[in-house]
Amino acid sequence: MLYKPFTEAYVIITGAASGIGEELVRQLSPSKTQILAVDFDLAGLEKLMIQFPAIHIMEADLSKKSGNNLVLAWVKTNWKKVDFCFANAGKAEFGPAEDQDWKNMDQLFQLNVFSPIQLGLAIKELFPNASFRLVITASAMSFWTIPGYSLYAATKAALLQWARTVWLEKTGNWLTLVFPIATQTKFFESAGKDIPKPYPIQTPSWVATAILRGTAKKKKKIFPSPLFLSMLVVNRFFRIIKRFYLLLEYQKYKNWVKKKYKS
Image 1 (cartoon, rainbow, N blue to C red):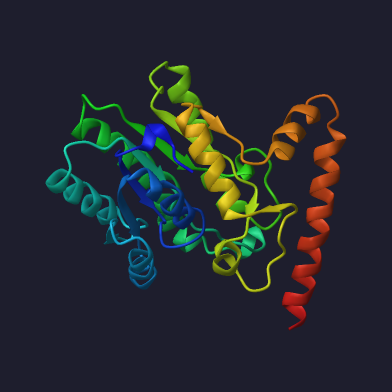
Image 2 (image 1 turned 90 degrees about the horizontal axis):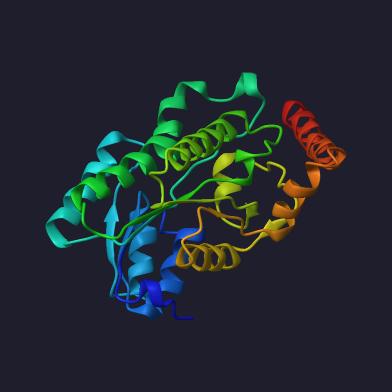
């Protein structure tokens, strides 16, 4: 599918080696988009480049403050503008709140929160006259957290509150947040062994399509799952919906904890 706003545009995609990021590359390529694909997984990037030889790739760990500097230095040297930045890189932590790896909190907040914000603001400053849009992959957990994801949900809620403030200040017409539900990616494998998967689950292709369509329309908020958006609206009047859903997820979490500590 061709997307007119992205035709020959200059686009950065982080977390591009797999999942939603890989699908964004795949769906944007027919539009002859100039793409800088960024990921810490060099092998994954090299495989991606075999499929799409016109893209540029960069190995960068955005959980470190130096990661953004690599991206910005490359862009400053090679491009005269950036039209879109899809800040999709992110990581999850799963487990009881008291057992989660709080020692890595700085890295998780750097990757999920600080990096996309800092990257977007730096690009705006680097190319002040360009028409630019930052699209950050947040999460449905920005609104409804799920047992086991205390630290991850905290990062996604932080993104939403920051964005709400920017929009409220009437200076955020360049900013979009995406709120996917559970997606069939390496997300769960990286979060922990045999962790329960929330219901329902969408494909990366579906989510990427929703992102591109919403971005083309300059939407502030993109909800790839119409079901979740409907649940947010209906729950305002029937709060039992959220309670019932979280009860189901709590049972999954409780069963996982029992198995974990038996093994």
